[in-house]
Image (cartoon, rainbow, N blue to C red; front, side, top):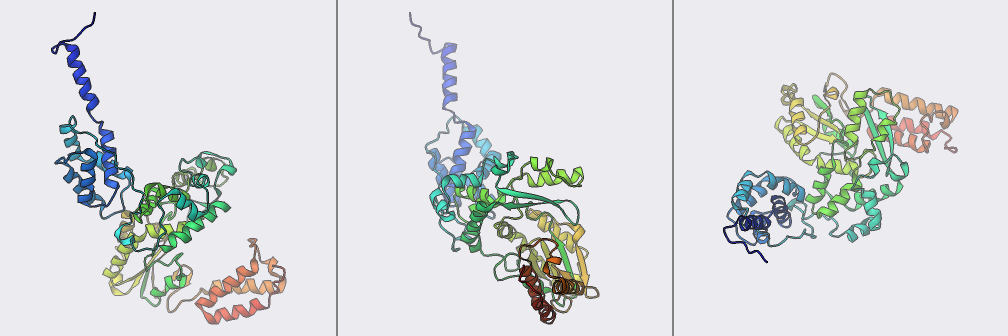
Length: 468
């Protein structure tokens, strides 16, 4: 005999409540659907709201406000990621109230697919970047297979969990800093280095750098970095702490998204250019560092970061520091000073207006750097007046670009000993091409002081370099 419940029975009421729960879209699912709608096209209030309406199949009254707040939060920064959009919507209080009020009526009409087309911000729209909208196009640019691309990008961090060198993409060397602490040199292995060079030439070198950045930029040098500060009454030199490892993978991925690449392409490029040092590396290291120094270094290098040694790292660091350079340039102009940066070296120079603020200037610079994700090593801050030797990046700038007298004398002594006893007697660091190394140092002096450079060149020409 069958049982047919009446409308008033408890079983019927329970079935009705359960059916209503099944029809209710889970909040996490709704957040993901709306986040995809936010990131699937142009970042405008109208565009975001239109895609949200389309995803839900209804023009809800609370959607335009959510779209307006989303665009306002991201329009002055990088192009938002799917994860960033989910985080914003999940924390939006007004969306939460709308969800609680309408959760039984909200339905999902469609899932907006992830866009495959390039979506650069307005500033990057005119840059001659390669169009990379599919994995095949990225593989063609880097001359790798899809499997090799996944292996080198290592998005799941398998290399960082292994202590087998053959499974790792970098060679590691731990060195002591002259100022204290540990530095990890991460040298990519041959194949990965080739891929990174293709990323550098194919993408990064096509991104314009800030005009006052001189490190690792084509056509600029230490000389162009130091030249604006020649003959200035006061020179302020500051140093950024842990410049490369302090730039995390999230910033690199945001940069690749901002210049237009889809999330999947941006993630793979980020994986190729960043690294996580294996944790077993620190257990097996042999240094006289303290436990505190070891713990600090392990925490710094064990999260995805720019590796010091990869050919892509200097260019990526310069791009990530662009906003900081803009703000520091504005600060310098406000006090009548000149500003330039070479990697982690920041230099300001000026006259009386700068002198009046020299006591407070380091704090202003440190605050701007901190807001842009960098930190200043205050132990290396130096204020140099004309009464003392003003030296930046190894170059003296008191009256003209010059080399220190002791550096000149030391190099001259090395060249003289090479002439008398042969180059091998002076190659204490085992340079593979010591003659070319010496020639480079001589030319460096010549570029700063032609007279001294010519004197060194005459000694160099008397050296028998046939065996080097």
